[in-house]
Length: 397
Image 1 (cartoon, rainbow, N blue to C red):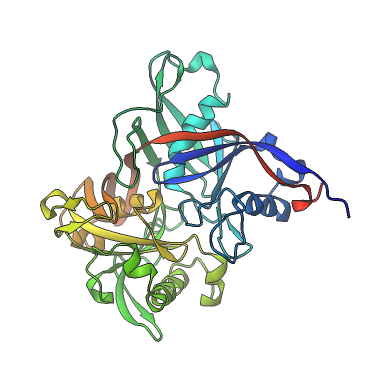
Image 2: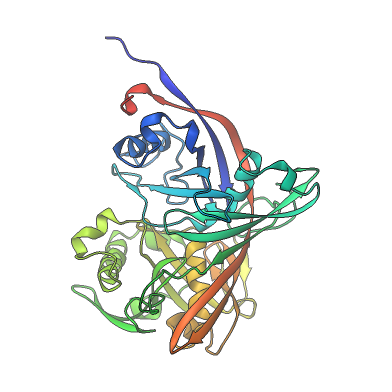
C-alpha cells in the first residue's frame, strides 16, 4: 500500500501572553482549508495532534493544555481602518472538535508582531524606532483590538525586561487595548445578558449560587470561592486532580451558559467548551503562587481562579482578565465586591502564577453599564518559524 507524502505548510509557532499557538497566513493554507468547514477543522486538529486519547499531543504541535492547543489564521483586513483579520481556533485535546466561539486574549498579543513580520503592514508606515499600533479585527467576535508593538531598527522588538507572571523569561512589553469589549446588543444590556449584576444560579445536584454573568472580552460566570468550598488561592492540582470538582464546575458552567443565552439546553455545553468561562473570586489574602513566590494581600485587590476547557488555568486567560477588569469597575458585581467595593478604573488580582493588572473604563449610560475599552500589558515572542507538516490525506485536496 502506498501513502501520499506529507503536506508542508508555512507556519509560525508563537507565544503570546501565557499561551502559545500555531499561526498561519490564510493564503498559505491548502485551498480546501481556506474556508470554514470540516477540512479546516481537520487540518488544525492534525497540526495540534488532536484528538489524543493519551492527552499528550505527542504527535502534534499542541502542549495538551488549554493554553497550548491553539491555532490562529491571519488574513488581510476585511474591515475599514484595520490592518488584519484575526481568527482563532481552540482545539479540543481529546475530542475531534475545534471551538470557534470566542477569542484568545493572550494570543491577541502575538497578532500585531506577526502582522508586521509577515508583510501585512506597509513598511513605509512603520517607525524605525518607536511603537506601532496594529489595529486588529477579531473575526470570531467582531471586535477591535489595538496591539501596541515596539519597533527597534525597523523590526519587531521581542526581547526586553518586561516580566509577566506565568511566563518564565522577560520580553518586550506589548500593550493591548480591547475596544468596546462587551457583546453588541440591541437592548443595551448585553454586557450583563440577564440584565442583572448578580443572579441566583440553580444547578441541579450541585446547589444554588449567586453569580455575576458578564460578557466582556469573553462570556464569563463569576461565583464566590467560599460559596463553592474554596479559598480563591488554589493551584492547579487542587482542582484538576479532583474529577468530582471538575464535574461540578462544568455543571455550573453549562447552566450559566443557558441563563446567558449562549446555548438552549445544557446538553449543548460539550460542543461549546471555549465559552463561557467560569471563575471564582475571593478577597485579597496572603498566598503562594505556583512558582513559590509569596503574594501579599496588600499587593493585590482580590484573588481570582478561572477554568478553561474544563481545567483550572495555570495563570489567567487574557479575555477573562478583560471580564475581571470590567466587572471590578462596576459596583455591585461579585468581582467588585471581592475587590472591596467602590468605583475603580484598574484592578490587580492574584492568579495561580502570580498577579496581573488590568484596567477598564466603565460608565453608566441611561441606566445601563457600558465599557469603552479594557487595557493590559502582555508580551510575545516567535518560538519557531518555517513549516508544519501533516499527512496529505488529512484534508480533501
